[in-house]
Amino acid sequence: MTDQIVVVGAGGFGREVLDVVEAVNCSSGTKSWEVVGVLDDAPDDINMGRLASRGVRYLGGTSADVRLPAGCHYVVGIGNPRVRELVASRLNQAGLRPATLVHPTATIGVGTQVGAGTVICAGVRVTTNVRVGSHVHLNLNCTVGHDSTVDDFVSINPLASVSGDCAIESGVLIGVAGVVLNGIRVGKNATVGGAACVVKDVAAGVTVKGVPAR
Ligand SMILES: CC(=O)SCCNC(=O)CCNC(=O)[C@H](O)C(C)(C)COP(=O)(O)OP(=O)(O)OC[C@H]1O[C@@H](n2cnc3c(N)ncnc32)[C@H](O)[C@@H]1OP(=O)(O)O
Image (tube, rainbow, N blue to C red; front, side, top):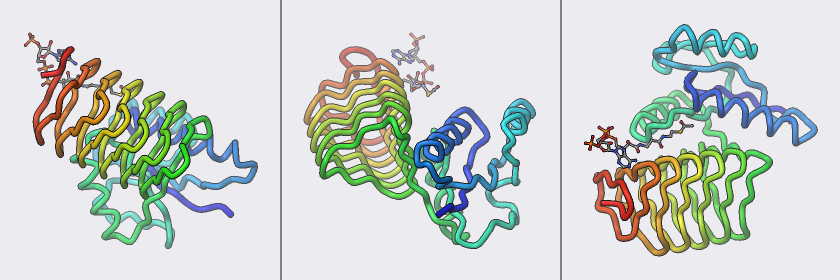
């Protein structure tokens, strides 16, 4: 069965999400997703050209009166957790349904749950008894260790590593190649800088960077 999907975001991650959709379609043998097009409130000319060159239609902005097929799914390909939350809320109200996308080269362990609207990119490793919330981005080659929780609207950027028994609260961004040592809690809406090593709990809303992160 083929479902219809719109991707929000013509930028880098939005188009990487299109790659995930294509990989899912290739791996399943049957076409799981038909891409209706891309929504973006302010696409630039370069990205419009990139969409056109891959044959994907630009549909308009997220608040515009865009007519989408009934029952259409969506996924938000915007890296910023706060913006992603706003857009998801708007599209839920419009009656669209969040899709969950898992690249065929990702691995997910036994007893792990993944929420709606979440995108898991190529090479990601999520091990066992992890709870991944809704609208989470697990970017290329990141890892999430056993028994951790990753709450809604978290972004874990490429090569970042969350160890076992961690609690990553909603809206957190973990920068590229950031490391969170085991058992650590990263508070709501906090940011972990690229290549940081987090060795103790991070308070909500705080940005930490460096090794050790502070
Ligand atoms: C495929 C993709 O592209 S996915 C996206 C990948 N990118 C990421 O993950 C980016 C993650 N973001 C970062 O690391 C950011 O630099 C942040 C969030 C840590 C800091 O952002 P800002 O607050 O805007 O910091 P800003 O750029 O103003 O720099 C402030 C200072 O921190 C330093 N700094 C910035 N980032 C880091 C970092 N990751 N580690 C150590 N120091 C840093 C800067 O050198 C600067 O130092 P100075 O005051 O001595 O000159």
